[in-house]
Image (cartoon, rainbow, N blue to C red; front, side):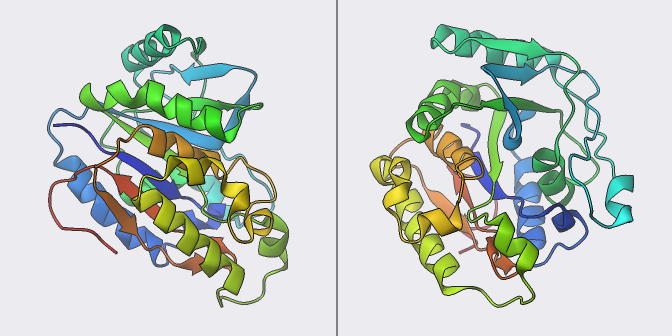
Length: 269
């Protein structure tokens, strides 16, 4: 069975403590992920590990990285004690090399909050090995889609590819927000992204700066790019399941997508 590719929104670090609407959806997805035959590891692409060139986390025991400041103290006590997957890391690096995308192994790399925060909800107890792939600092949207295509064979080798970003990510408005009411521009951008993702409209996804309110939804690209990696790892004709995670702090959309088939319940849209 081909393992699906996922895009999840991790929002703010406080999502670890405040599951909201998205947490239970991720937990339900995780229960179905556990039922996948032959699943070996989860490969996470997060905007919080940016490097010059590609790097693959190859630690056998990746540490939980608290790469944020000024949040409630309980967040810093949380740990996600997943095992690493050094053998899978070597396979990922070899696959990328074959695709003309050379990658270096990073034997000491831990899990940043883009990885462990959503996994706390999706797979509590850390039952599966987890490793990360960095986002190059000069990665463009078309490059992110190409990276996903290069990773696609892993789906037939027992590896779940998970892009973790945020479907909208305006940190200035997040810090200023005093309401849980969803801004109109967030809804409009989410509606556009959902249409493009479910239609496998790669041209639209790459040219997302033509989407309504894209500059406000994403003042910079990095939290959008993991969606392109996940979409690139999928193929036209595959089902796309929508996780309607709602909106937190009025401006952070928590919507996510499953590209491909998962056992169990039908779409959560």
